[in-house]
Amino acid sequence: MNTHETLLLKTLQAKQLHKNGGDTARFIDAVLDQNPEEAERLTKNVCARIPLALAEQMEGFGSLLDLNKREIITMALRDFLDKAKSLVDEYDAWPLPDDGEE
Image 1 (cartoon, rainbow, N blue to C red):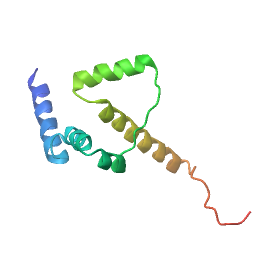
Image 2 (image 1 turned 90 degrees about the horizontal axis):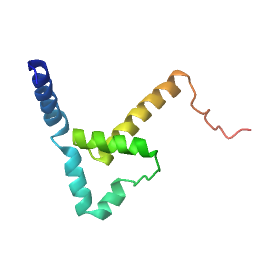
Image 3 (image 1 turned 180 degrees about the vertical axis):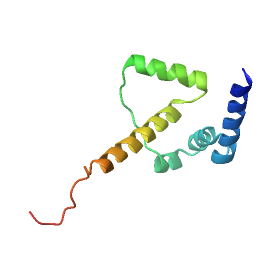
Image 4 (image 1 turned 30 degrees about the horizontal axis):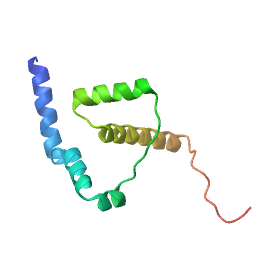
């Protein structure tokens, strides 16, 4: 790695430690595994069939970047929700409030 890449890596590691409290994703996984009742209260298992090629890419990059499926799907959903909300806001596409009149 060159100097820039090394500094970028160290900077992002510091950001993860200071902003997220370290490896919170692995900590959350461990807590949920130890307490299934709490997992049911705090999370929802979302199952969906996706194209095989997409799943293989997810697993490949997840392995390369040390991210599990939950982490990848959570990031993808957050990104989608941010973009969807932004567009619905921008184009004022929210449903009209129901005032009880027809």
